[in-house]
Length: 137
Image (spheres, rainbow, N blue to C red):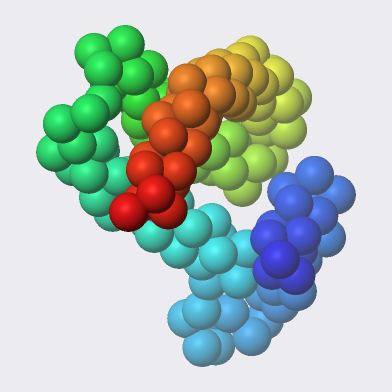
């Protein structure tokens, strides 16, 4: 969480632990850039595993599968937008980065939250019934 907070501070406040002199002599990248790449890169395999698990589950309805598919695609898009926002910030295009974040990231985040809430709510009954069935045995 500490490094994620540093990345946000660096992006919005221009603050960073990055030292250009050290980077030039050692060929290193900003830790915030590395953290963003690591988080986005780590999210993609998790998405693929989650989608595979959902597709293999025979008790998932068409509506639940569609909703999860929407979440999957929105998260993929959000990852791409995060990289674009980061690149704009690095290029010093702060107003464009803010506009892209406002116009693309916020609606995607809201859609992901809404679809996730609905999906979890619809699965809650199934999970409860399965748990009760196991307890009865």
